[in-house]
Image (cartoon, rainbow, N blue to C red):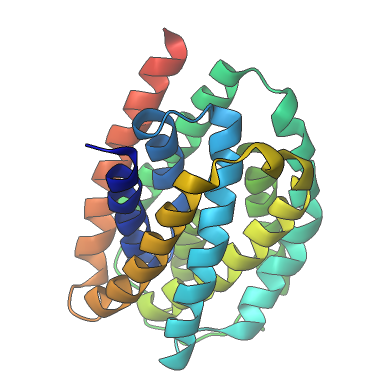
Length: 249
């Protein structure tokens, strides 16, 4: 299969995940860029941030139109994550096996979190009662983005459901706001590292992901959040295992 077709196929999957689940974009994009398209881990994390930023903004728009974004809670997450995202400069100094292994561990922990989380919350809270928790969670997500190039949405969704009692659709929509701010902040710290990006691969990847995000939003309306979350968690565990094996070789 040609590089272009691989990029389009991978982009479609990433877009579906972001549009339907409100997370998982970088966790899927980074392995695809490394194992399918031949990117080095450090370059893959930067490319994934570019792809996820464009895709999450598109998905955020579609969820906002449906009224599924809790803007105040998302802003509190962003207020916590933006300073922590400045740690992104450290990534370029990490050995590639360490970066790959660390990413695998984060992916595995996220998958376990998804599998262990219960049903979607039934509340409609907007985060006013728990600003410290919201901002603290945002700080943790910002640190992950800065160090590993992950968007953090796969952790934001369970946090919004379990900590702030959001129903699943609101958690997904608000997570996309968190991912957009998180990715933009982290990308800003990596401006110099974007010079070597292979745009012939990244551009079609991002284009397919943006289109996939629209389909993901429609899919989320037809399939229960529990089914989508558990299916994604199983796939995520498989990806984490592959990356950890590669890092330990």
